[in-house]
Length: 296
Image (tube, rainbow, N blue to C red):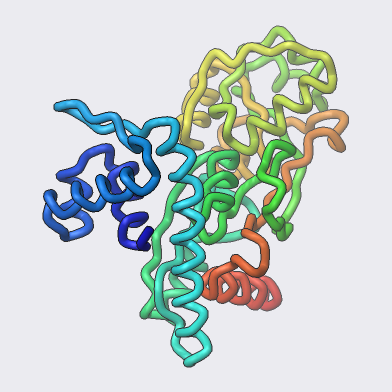
């Protein structure tokens, strides 16, 4: 088994298409097909189900994919470690982050990183915290700024960034706004909620708080970006439980504290692989983050 076989296999699995994968790898389609057939012969099992329209990974292929991604990530880290010893940081920094994550200004941090390390290619992926944790564990991301959760892969290292209470956002004409008091989950059972998809950090925290209180809630309006959530609350279509810093994004909304704040704390962290698997680029970004935090 050669590394190029694994690289070819991962590319086809990602693109679900031989022609697109060949174009991305800048190899001939016939050469790519031959490489995959060679790998299938060695493993004595089909890795893809091929149709005229698409290519899907078989069960054996899915098992190989997780290991192939880890192997390729380790090889990349080895190359980058040698370059770092030679005094030049090269390679790729693959960063994941949730939207509007507290405790870090990702665009500013990446701009400072690029200024210091112009030979490193920066890749950014935005997703929910659960998916980001899985991608760091699989080696597809070097690190992620996210909200850690109990279901995250156990091998990840978590470096705390910040914490803050959750708050209830509602329209100024809403009954909660008129009362103007802190709100307990038990008082929100009959409300219509605007919230993120279940994979998002704030949603995971809110779901856990309501489960702990034994309160069932209805998330009728589910979104995947902060501004859509604020727009819907601003139209009085529902209420939202969000990290406190969200209130600064929409001054027209009323923000109310959540009772029992210990159960509804929004904590963010940098998620990294174990130290031996952490890439030089990820270590450099974390060092830069620590330096900027010290200057703040």
